Length: 246
Image 1 (cartoon, rainbow, N blue to C red):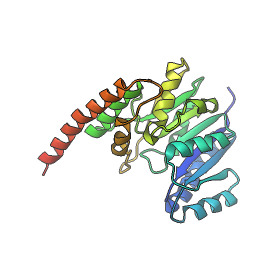
Image 2: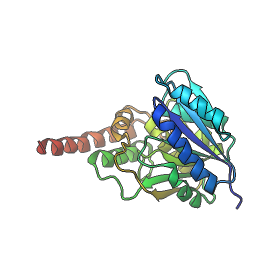
Image 3: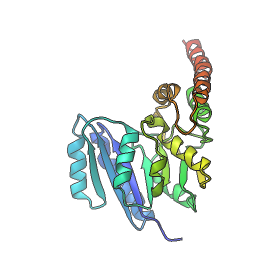
C-alpha cells in the first residue's frame, strides 16, 4: 500500500505562543512518517497576535498554509474550511491544546488499512465522572461507540467531508463523522493513544452543547433526551462527590 498524502489540520484561536512549537512538532513527526504532507493552520478569529504568528510560519515553512476565519466560528467550522482546501488523501484533525498530540500519528497510520475513519482514544481512559458521563451521552444521542469522544484526534479519508453535518457542535464533529461512516457500512477503527497530563478535553463545555443538540444523523430527539438524562444523573453524582471533599 502506497503512503497517503496527509493534510494536518490545526484550528487555532488566541494561541500565539503555542503555534510555533506545534508546527515544529508536526514537521518533525510528519517528516519522519509521511512522504508527502501539508499543515493547514486555521486562524479562528483570534484577537491576539496569532494571526501574525501563523502568517509568519506560512511564509517561513513550505508545508504550512494558513486560512483565516475573520470571526470566531469554532472548531467544526474551522475543520470544514480546511478540509475543503486540503489536497491530502487523508485529513489528520488534532487540537494543539488537547490531551494528546501529533506524536500519535504513527499509531493512526498503522491502523489505517482501508478505513474511512480512524479515531484515537486515551489508554488508560479518563476516569472522571464527567468524562464517563459525556461518553455515555454521546453514545445515546448519536449512536456512536467511540471510546473517547471528547478527544479531538482523528484521521479522516478526504472524501468524508460530506459526513460532517452543518451546525454541529464543536465537540461532536468527530463523533458525528465516525457514527455516520459506521452507519454507512464504511470501515472505521479506534486506536489507543497516549494522553498528556494537565490537558483539558473540554468534556464539560461539550456536554452543554450535547444536551440541546438534535442530531441529523439520528433524526429524532429521543436520543437527545436520553443523553440529557444521562448527563443529569451522572453530573449529579459528580457534584455530590465534589461537595463531600469540602
